[in-house]
Length: 379
Image: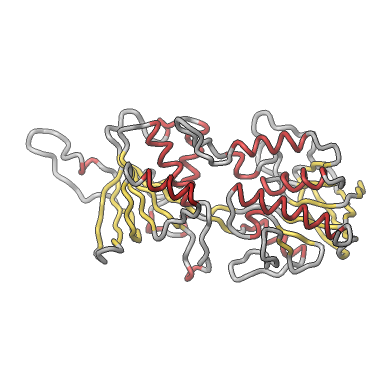
């Protein structure tokens, strides 16, 4: 078994993981970064840029920048296709055994140079958990039609279409004056399901996507259904105020997605009115009036939230970490530097709770600073 000694083991190669690894190395520490998949960047590596005629400040460009910066860090050893099998010891003297895993097929251009082929043992002083998140499965709510109607997709699906295949994969050019609905808080803010939290990134990601789609397809009409839009920050409030002039926002709770009722052809031989051509209808409760309303759309986009995911739950068991009421690791700390219930194990990014790219980076930098100070005796 290959044995390695380092100051810090970082678990997770997403935004939080590689950011923390870079800052720790810059402060003079040896770091081992372990990632289950074959490449770094996490889920953010598959997100499309939201720029229109100007930067949308979606932070996606920071992913590739961060990965390139990490490659220049000589004291960071990257290990991919690997998972944590066991953890022993205490703060200042941990022993972590890694084992190879079979992950998803490599994407073109990914390097296999760092793939773990045999068991490895890492001796380290501190551990940073940055294992990311899993997206909520909207199939858990069959009333929203995901998996039943091809017109119902997730925000991640649209993002993937834009990145890989272009707008036509989502909205064919042959579709005249399309109408699209965005539904916020799918899988979030649901106390009955144990997910009473806000997923933080969904509102801003939806607004950026709406603006991007309208930029690409000016004849597109978009309606956003929301519970309470999270638009903190002076700059983003201005951004939202600008968008209210171009898009329809309805504060309402979507109840069900259905096929339109059967409509007879019109007498002149046409296929019916423009409204009748919409493929799906959304039934919702309008919060302003308290009435049940419905509206037809060509596409419905579900803004799905974040969940801890099975991989993070398994790591919590192996690290012997306590969890909070939502299934995330119980975190200590009033600021961005988070510690877990086990001394010497730190947290950063979406594994500790819903987070977007900027927050993940902030927590990673704060965690690196906290680890450096703790290992130096509090200096």
